[in-house]
Image (cartoon, rainbow, N blue to C red; front, top):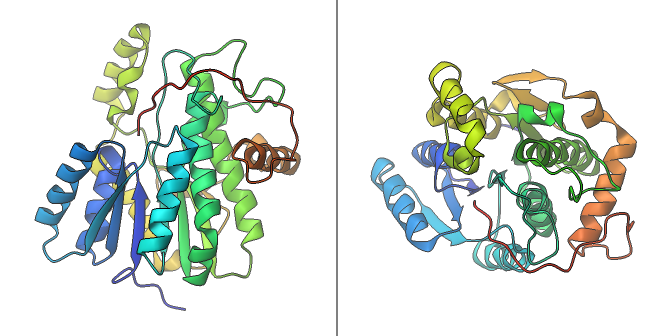
Length: 303
């Protein structure tokens, strides 16, 4: 079946800055009916008007969600299901990093909570609607950082040896593993799901990096980082490319289809991660209990 983004309903999370904003803007210009999701009401409203100005006549709307709170992710899913009778594309892009180990109100390490469980819970809650809208696409923004990621189910939340980059790498490895598992479960439905590293993008996500890392980031910003516009185009490529109609469960790096890290292709790890994700999001409370959530007060996350 041919694929044309015009008139299709596209939801982009983390769409109030960086690559998410650029992708939403481009998709609106191409005729998609775009829904942007942000955390801050005022900022989300400003971004909506900015996109509207650059894409006159586009059908645009916005919703709010703090992806560190599972109650908010569930509310967001309810809002989407009530407002929209179809969802042709879901772009999971909301993400964060934390300099210090932070735990959410759900008792989950915050980077993992936002970057992986946010994707997982929202997608699973919307899955029936997406399948009903087929042909449809799910795009998960991962990172080349997954190649240094580990998946220790005995210490999933880094109670021992936390670092920003370790937590980020684990969350992005989870994105790639989830993408591959979900693609298998969606086989034959007309829904594809792929993940990507959009490039080393100069965005605000690294504003929370520790003091010692900021000189290194400044060097990368000058020498290696690409503009957010280019990273956004790589998301759009996976959303709109007609040549990708049958491509699913794959990983793209800098616009090219490549194999992810070996651990990201480990089926046993993928199955265990799915079980843990179901348990931690209470989609299947009886799943494996290797990493019980900690009863610690809430901590805010960025999106």
